[in-house]
Every structure is written in C-alpha cells, then in structure tokens.
Image (cartoon, rainbow, N blue to C red; front, side, top):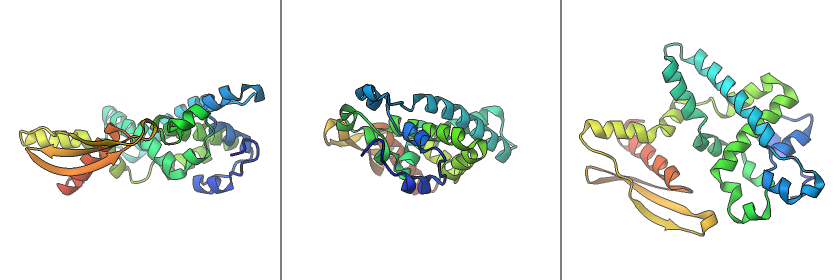
Length: 230
C-alpha cells in the first residue's frame, strides 16, 4: 500500500461515512510502529485519536444503554456496557469492516500477524471513531457506533458473556465447564487454537480461534445454543 495515495472510497462505504479530510482516516489507520519506522516522514499515528474515540464510545454507548434499558440498575448497565466495548467485540467489528487490510504497520508487526491482532483491531475501531468525530461531529460519530455496535444487543451481550452464562448454568447442575485445548497449530504470528467444552464428562461444542480465550468464547456460545439458552 502507498501511504499517501491509498483510496479509501470502498472502506468509507463500509463504514457508512465519507470523510471531508481523508488524512484523519489515514492517521486513524496508522500504527505507531509504522510511524516510528518511517519517522523521517513525520508520520502521525493513531494513539491520540484512539484516546479520543475511547471517551466518545463510552459516552455514546452509555447514553444509548441508559435510554434503551430504563429498568436496569447502574451496576447492570455497567456490566452490559463492558460486554459491548470489550476488545473481543470491537476487534470482530473491525475485522468485518476490513480495517486490517488498510492499517499501516511496521515490517516487524506485519511479520508477526499485526493485521489480525485483536488488540490492534480494537484500537482501530476507537481511532476511526475519534477521526469521524473530529471530521463531522457527534452525530456521525453516534451513527457509526449505533450502526456497527449497538445492533443485536442481546446477542452481543450473550456472546461476550457466554462463558459466565455457561458457568452459572453448569453450577446449577452441580458441575463446572472444562475447556481442554485440543489443537494448536500454525506459526507464532498466525497461531490457531481449537478447544472443546466438556460438562459432566460430556463433550459439547468445539471451536477454533486466534487465541485460546477467543476459541473458548466461541465454544461456550455454541454450547449455549445447543442447550437452548441463546
């Protein structure tokens, strides 16, 4: 990718927002490793935009949950918000939007799988949000969050809380879920993990992910579906 000549039209259509200043979007997709590697060009990276986007995300998601769930207590709202804005959820959205295909990384980050790393993808969701806010204000920022995050809330909450929900279900039966690692394959920068869910000696779902935690969440969620809980 050419840093100064990349066309973002396709990405903007996916995001649902057309930038007046595409330099903001470029900066939102520039990792600090790339900035440091090409410091002679005075390349700015996304960390300040991520800082801004994180604060805006907390405000928008809090307000939206407050309005949608008038019956929930402060503690319940906090838990629901945490399940929405966690790394796993935001990184999946960024992956679906294709941010990993556009992010500028150093050669070292590229070689170690940076385009698929959940922590980087999570950052990108927030940095793009910060860029949208600076470019167009609060309304397009709100539309971005509502369109890509605040949809199908019950499913998202169940998914991100799947292990907890399954733990509570199993404990009522006097059992504890186990998540044995069945397989680990691939090079260090693109490792894949496969786990299973075992409850009371019975094997339920199996799932594969880029991390053990991610695979466990997928397997727990599928097990809930098999049990008719989600």
